[in-house]
Image 1 (tube, helix red, strand yellow):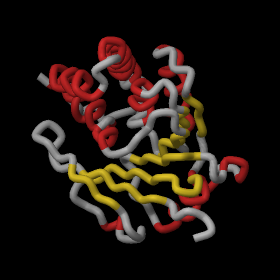
Image 2 (tube, helix red, strand yellow):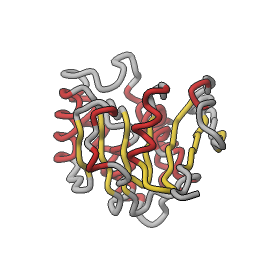
Image 3 (cartoon, one colour):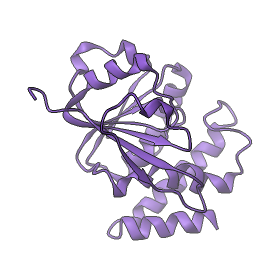
Image 4 (cartoon, one colour):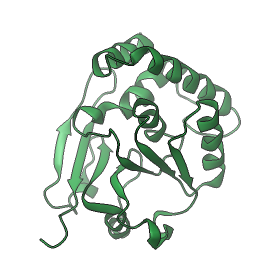
Length: 209
């Protein structure tokens, strides 16, 4: 049921390219199942069937509210490559940087990119506060699915965004870390398969205003 629901989502959202997307996500699914035995990419309590909805579908829920096509994207705290790898699969013309401070996870994700023939991924195994100045103002979108945005993260995140760029946060019920951002847009994308889910979009103010 879960895989079928995800395939239906792909058909509806990406009608022109869903057959090749399905093949790529099947490969990603198989890679996660195998690699998760070696390194904890996602909870080992997860029913494999739920990966299709709780991870793959969930990772793409923001696409109806954010245009990722052709964008430079940073996935902050990517963990098992979610949502960065699903976005890289769905948008081959986007440039996706996967950032996580845990080197083993980034090493595993390099392997995933090779297996999936993704040429639009790059990798950073550092903390967000350690991202080099040369990357300031280079990202159109920063997305984070599993990290609570602490106050000390706000400045480096905004430094990395281009003027007018977007910070996209996946949240469930708890939105207390969103209050630090002025004029955040909140989209309710809850459904029966995922449960309660909100997409928070914060736009970096145009410089000079």
